[in-house]
Length: 416
Image (cartoon, rainbow, N blue to C red; front, top):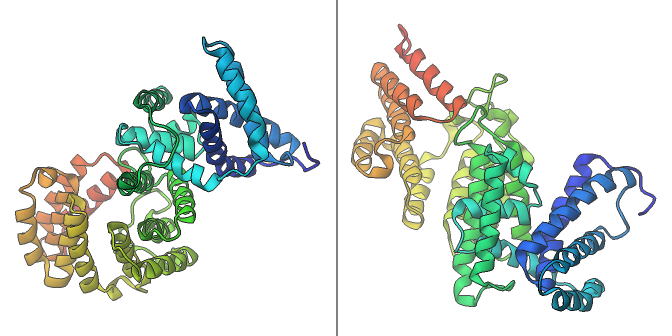
């Protein structure tokens, strides 16, 4: 160990989060057996967390982690039938840490391995947070509000599937890379969305998830600076998360975008996000994350809600529906239709769109209809729809917001 002073827990965690994917990538590339390497690294990370807090960082933290994890691997393999072969392999490769190691390639390969098509989206999320993010099973469970045993099972099954598939630790063939990269970006998008608008539970925002998603998106963008969708994804996260401080009141209740105090928005994050998306849009190809980031930028650059360029947002949603059609994109476009062409036109569009199964009984369909009815000057009808939306929402802050909106509109003079 060096002579550095003891480190705080957050400082140690920052180092570990940065080094974990680098070390895991090197371990898997050298030794194979992703599942064993990941387990060995987790033990090394736990040891590092305890020791570095009191002793400070070693001179080469990455080498320390690699060495400890390698020793653990050898211990594991001693108890297996192929002990001699694996020990010989370990002996030949364990001294190679000092050689040139393409850590950037390893980390990108690790991203793609965690998002292997054999895995379900939920498994991809859990494994990415564990292997690339460096989070423990307990941390992932707390972040996702899922029992630790459940997360452990997901990660275990994911590693078993990777092992059973026989996939090597290598970049996928050129003809598969686009689809695998799309899976990586989608996984990070899911992590961010679950953190920014929790699908269930007592809080609206889970900062640990949004922060981790942004950190991993930065990591991905750094590996692929010419990938316009990776840039768009990072920009989208920054521009969206910039509003976090204004999204809830002190009691945790939700504040809709139009009513937020924009002085609380993070101007630095907005500037970075706008610069990223502006640069990405000058290059090709165009993609859904860039379009979503462009929409977020239009919102964030408006000094007041009434200054929002809704015609531009409507045009961008029209493009987004062609690139990545989906129920939430449709609902957001309908809101934009209402802002540009009036609530009556938007209600007609909604009546047609909700015929599809994805929107038929979704709480946001009722919430959008309520919003449009409120705009149209029909408070009692809007109140009914807000109540129906609240009954279907699993998010406690969102449900409280919808109920309060309904109560206000239903009260005497509430719609005036």
